[in-house]
Length: 490
Image (tube, rainbow, N blue to C red; front, side, top):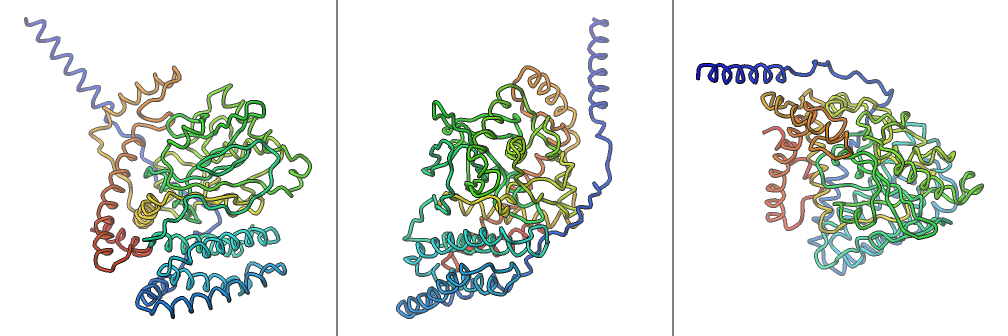
């Protein structure tokens, strides 16, 4: 009995020593120094957004005949200006663009009340964004002021349009919005009722908290966090989607699997048919997609948490698209993304990111080489997308004020054991609970981040409900940000 007692004592002592060893934290690092040479975009337009809301309130109180008449006046001005914009090449900094956008904001504020005009507004919006994309082909996108102008126009008009859509009551807007029917010679398929072609890029936004972080943690905060490359087999016409997942690296999915994976929104993008490389070989997108499809089937590509698009041994989602096209001589993301805010850099580095001049999904929209073919938004989840963005914007303000992402260090030994088991599963081609390439510490920090997001989001949703009850309309995005900022500082 004494020997048994000693053995049990030794066992517990050994387990205690092992626990203490596993409790040793990763080597501490100072803030990750980064110098992209860029500055994050700042709207500095609070007065403009608040003016939109005030115009909406006034429109709600206006006589319906008078409101219709006012909308028709602004519509005539808008259509006249659009004709003038199409007549010639206009510099990015021309005041005509600012006037066009301001007029669009006024129209959006009024039409949010008179929703029978929404089809006209969405058609006008799609024609304007196509025009801006066409005009930007002549602009120097390496010039920061030009990049800011394009972002302001494209993102600003999307934001205004979605504020209108979120106020819809009797009008149910269609999820799919055609934009430009860029011609393609490659095989076609259908996703969510939209015709897509082999080589198209699906720029999407998932429902996970980290998806919101990726879409907003950028010098140009956007609405998209993920890229998938479409491949359609020429013989069978079977469509596939090639994408890199944090959980399992590069993988091939069927259309059904892609549609079942939660999407809050997505955008279809396609290389312009008049690009020199495309004129020389209209089947270039098919070759790019086929190359990546074969590569993904022949070997395992782990997820690239470092976001290094120059090393193709591991891949993140944008890299799947850029690498496949690069093998065929076409460079997408001609203008790389930058992440320059120190707090954002620190938080992303906590999750393994080491490259802050990289390729972010949202920035693909501003590349003049690519056309926006269509955009899809789920009417039921668009508000969730906005809430998630507002929460992340407020949390990133906290990050930029020096707040770290903490974690429960007492859980570290257990999570390290789980990570060891996950590594064994990865060796046999299985997906572990902790993604390949993510450490136990990073997993615990991710857990903290998810909990922070959930806490702030619940408070924002409560305040949003109170706001809607009091005011008779859903809170616009700028109000959601205020709610989130208050919740973060509680």
